[in-house]
Image (cartoon, rainbow, N blue to C red):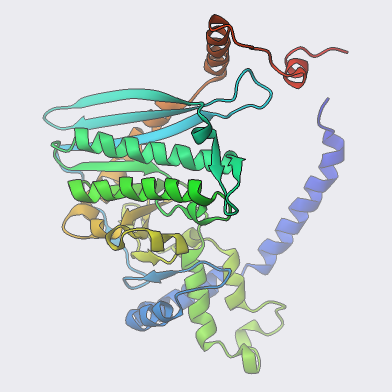
Amino acid sequence: MALDVLAASSQVRTMAGALAAQAARMREVPGFATDLLRTWHTRSEEAQAYLEGLETGGIWPFAVPLEPLLSAFTVRGEPRDSAVVATDGSQINADSHGLVRCLLINVGWAALSYGAEPHACLSSRPIVYFHDDDLYGEDEDGQQREMGDSMLAMLRTVAELERLADLAEEWRDRENLVAITDGNLVRWEFGGKGGGSARAALLARYTGALARFRHMDVPVCGYISRPNSREVANSVSLLALRECGHSSGRCPRCAGRKRPLCESLHVLNDTRMLTHLRPGQRSALFRSLAPILQHYEPADRILFCYLKLEDEIARIEIPRWVTGSEHLSRVLSLIHGQCARGRGYPVVLQEAHEQAVIHGTAREAFRRLVQTAMVGEGLESAVSFKRLSKDLRAV
């Protein structure tokens, strides 16, 4: 047996005990958060001005509310005629112990229309990368280094958004069209360390693809299921600290606590701050202050809100320009309808995922395809002994 379950069991019990103790310490925090939201809901302009003035939360990312904090707007019903497009991706990483240094990215997509002319288009497209320019990039020191898993994930993200923009262009004549991507439009990872010119090139491609939706006037959004973001909670924490008296003696509510309540808000995620929402309602809009957005066009910088569904709260990210006209209402109504059809998750994203996923049999088929092609060209096609030992275990 590879895992010693008995050895792990005591550690799991310790973990459960620690989590129970943390839950006990946090029991008062949600109520404290609710009181803060009520207080600052009526002081929305003051809250916005204060947070705009900070512009940085140190190690705690936060966001600026553009509407009163306890806002709850009911999403309108779907239009009779509408269309949605979405993409998703998966990959086969380059394997140093494999037959040849190459990787594959498979982008799947779904395009669905409803109403007078219902239609569905489901497909995928694989891209094989094997040139040195694809597998290696220049870092900050000017050295050529092999792309790691994080860089390859960014390459896949770019491929997904570029294909989504292509789909939007192909379907732009459909009435009430919305493009949906699985995950964030705020791509924090593009601002990380390492990658040098390769990372910068991928970021330029990503922002270029994002701008295409604006030029086509096709609203695009990012859908995040079960989000764990804490920007709203951190914003409320900063507002609490502004007037907190614990610098000159703790406020009475925190008496006897090792950690002040306002600091404990960092442990909450945003969805636990938004218990006032009812199914079919969206929260206030917030402006993300992620540093990476400085590389986006001003009109494409990301706002977000939360949408309450029947069983969860989803995070919806949109470029700033989408908040104009009727675009935001269209985005939210179509997402809400897609989630109703998909039992809690957008159908179009489900279908795109099914097209993108690479199952074990397909991975093995790709490996054999590579081997056959190598042999056909008279090239070496052996795997390393490490890979061989994994494939053919012996005692």
